[in-house]
Length: 150
Image (cartoon, rainbow, N blue to C red):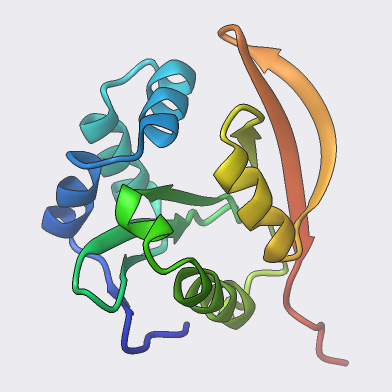
C-alpha cells in the first residue's frame, strides 16, 4: 500500500481529527446514510477497515482519511483542506488507490456530493446502480484493481 509525503497510516486520533472537521457534504452523507454522528461513523469505518490512511496537503492541514474493509469496500471522508490543493490531493489519492492489492473496490456515494463523484471518476471508478436509502440518492461504484497472476 502506497505511503508518501502526504499519505501516512491512519490512527484513531487522526481519524477523529478529520471527523471533527469534515466538509459539509461528507458530514451530511455519512450521518444520513449511517444514522451515526460523523465522528462515530468515521471511527467505525476506521475500525472496520483492514487498513486505512490519512491524507495531508502541502500546508500540513488534514485533508481526509480513507480505508478499505476486508470485503473490498473503499471509503473516504474529507475536510475542506482537500480542495486547497486539488491536483496534489487527486494525484496522491490515485497513487493510493492504484497501489491497493484488492481484486476490486466498491461502495456507494451520495450523488449530491459532487466533489466525491468527480473524484471517483478521476480515480477510474465505474458507476453501476442508483438507489435511494434514508432519502439519500446513492450511486454504487466499482473498480477492478489487482491483475490476477497466472
